[in-house]
Length: 161
Image (cartoon, rainbow, N blue to C red; front, top):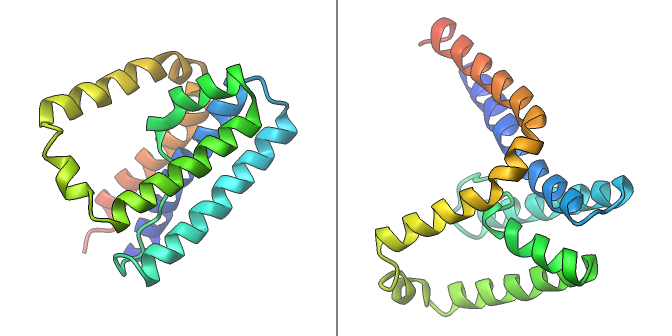
């Protein structure tokens, strides 16, 4: 029972974070709801494929690979200026660059360039750039947040082993 509750909690947290990215980007660049729905489907499909690759080839753990909030400001800028096709192209090129960076073992060399101060400031700036969007879409996240909170509280009180 404990594993089921933890699994449901993990899926809810993963699903909220994964669906929020296409909602935010699509709404910010003025896409119709039908295009946003296609973006959500594409993200879920890619996330499933990445999770299977991570489980069977990568770390060999069932780690859910989701979308990242770090790319939202750039995607919104590209989408607002050029359009959805440019966003898709940027994601493909970014994926290729990231894959090559990992395959060539450049991550260890690049980590030396980024101190905790640089990393912290970068994360803080991403958070600041998303603050306006967070306020606009807080009603969506609040339901998932409260559901996750109450499920975890229930688990911690009643399902202790």
